[in-house]
Image (tube, rainbow, N blue to C red; front, side):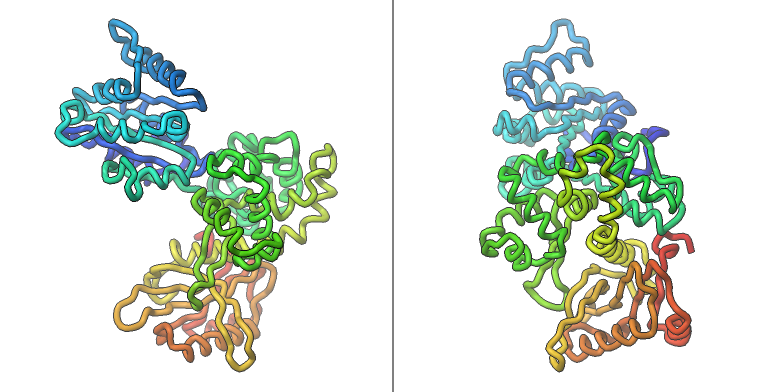
Length: 490
């Protein structure tokens, strides 16, 4: 299967689909593809069907009978049988799909599968029965059935626990947003400073450039402010209301006002359950359910504190939603009036830097440490990278650590490869280095991790002064990481 020329990256996903679809072994097989909306799942799967001569069906929100009529008509157009298909139930439809793979491996895609299950909750059980071992319709087929959906909470339950399709899937593929490096390449931005500012607004969702912004990318660093005004803050563009629609499209989010308030609390810097509860003037137990639902929907991410047990913090997983709650939602009435965007953005830039750009820079630094950093630079291969608060018993204060690189346990204690500090607007100096050295001493005294070779990482969007560079030159345990390094330009 040759990947389409117009498809950006997605090499891993295309290779996984190719291996699954072209697998010559006998017997029909099941695959599940999921991911947040606008990531290009439909484009990816439709292209795979075209490349392999398969069948693609996109479900819609409809009654069960209407969906059966639609798939009957679509399959009739695809196969051209002597008599048109008129499926009375989904068992007949699924068997007809399995029959497509009688002679060779054939991909069959049912996109937006959650819509069908919402109208007919028995559909997963129907597919389970159709793929039952030793069943003739399954063993005589080489159909590669792919179920796709954007409702992450639903798709996550599809193969879990006692679900009917548990243990039936031969492929579980998650189509994720582009990371900061790929997003910069996709947007055609070579300046790392500008690339990170754009990524803090729209993240790595491909559709936001091509369809939603009509390929309008900043012309350079000086064009960033104007770009924000004419795209995200412009009521005429789809990006303007996209953050609201992302929440409304999740089927499990019924009390939208409460979920919006939880996200607003996190965007305002209240990252703990207690902080969210205080912001909403509710008990922590009252917001446990909406937090869990937002996590399942992939909109809220839970980060464990690597230094304190049972002290998790939360962050908004989709940058555009974070930008909306921090910058747009507080002044929504003004933004809806044409011509107000420039004035609103001028007044909101400081809030954008402190509540959006700063935290986003810290997360990019953690992602870089986990996925891109040379193991020799950080002292080994990381198992995970998190953040946390280190307690100082003498002063009775807590010190925040922006990045904590945890190694692979190989003995009595888990190695702490490195701790890091990330500053977007601050030039790193000797005071920052001394602070992180003190924090490392506190971690050593606590004795939880193996700190024999713990290194100090300093990330900065503003650079490093001469004293910091001199300290790094004389101490191999100090590493200075700038924006070009984060973007693989050095």
